[in-house]
Image (cartoon, rainbow, N blue to C red; front, side):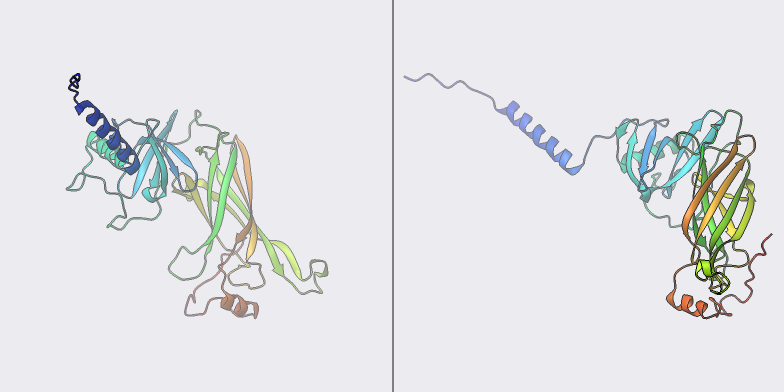
Length: 309
């Protein structure tokens, strides 16, 4: 009476359905198949500051920082980048994960016979061992094939670099950059001038309403007396006399003019406005404006500002 129902197997449909579901779950949970990695893979990292670094993994990479090596001609520059600063990363132009980056570092360590911990893995997180805050940058000396500088970038902040609590001067972080904005190596020296307002008697400077804009510091520092910090150099400018730390009539803000003199290539200048010269403190500021010292004797009785040359 009725035609028999043909026998049909639902197994292929069930398998396809489960594959589709597993694929959706993998995308939703961020689980992807591991990349094929090699020790010479090109890694591109974007940090929280918005800067992007590109290069190969250095064997010095560890759980504190990822060291990227970039080569241009005869210059090889290794930049340490903190794990916590990384926001995006690609390996061989493919979006990747921190796990793949750790696996790549482990692969580079094995290729270069770098001794690891007992686990043989790179751990992401703070180091249990003490580590210097300032990391040096390795680069070869400048050669005629070096990319010529086109501009100077810099920023400055007040800094205390000894054991007492007093501010010692300004710390300037600077870098010579080529026409594409990439750091390049140079020879020469750094010059800096600091200008600010200093209070005077109103009768002496009525046109300035009791304040005079003047130079309170000048420095000339050879580049071999600066030190490396990541892909930049750092110069320390000790306060001279009069000092914004000991003289309350000096404004807490100043203008710093920085010049990088490169023999045979020119002088590159940048100006930094509204540079804070001392930390804000309502108690110390009020006490200093009344003619009293900003720091008390037991805090630093041996402080003497550097004499202006």
